Image (cartoon, rainbow, N blue to C red; front, top):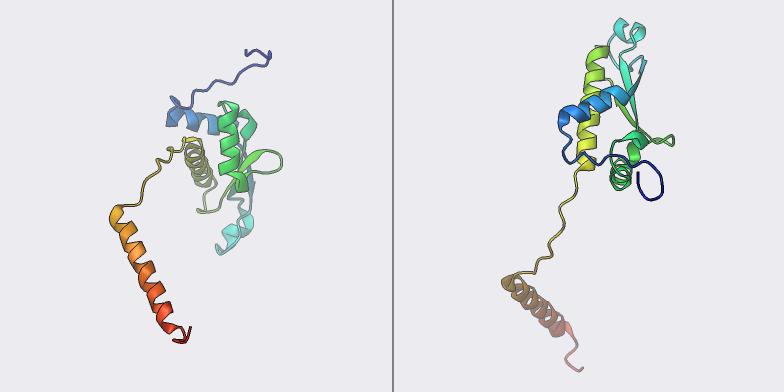
Length: 151
């Protein structure tokens, strides 16, 4: 509990390993199946192998800052219902497509939850700065020579 009386989500993704993240995705993911498009003959017309995996972002076991980061990084994949949406139609097997979708979800979440390294400002090397100024002077001299001599 925090000071406002609301329960605090555990912030354990720093120590959360892949197996825990995989379990969370498997446990909280809602899968839907449909018939895949594209080539495949009779199999495409009669077997629902396309997998759509929906993961509720609000239930991620991390603090609000990390949840907001997931929403920002994966914004184009998040529905209006605040669910991460992943589709897979790669194989002709429904169970394999489900596995691929869950792996993809784990990879996306791992990437989105990783804290970005802070940018360390760097200076331009002296040689590069001198070269830039030399080229600038050269360009200016070239333009100055194009002018009318009467001026």
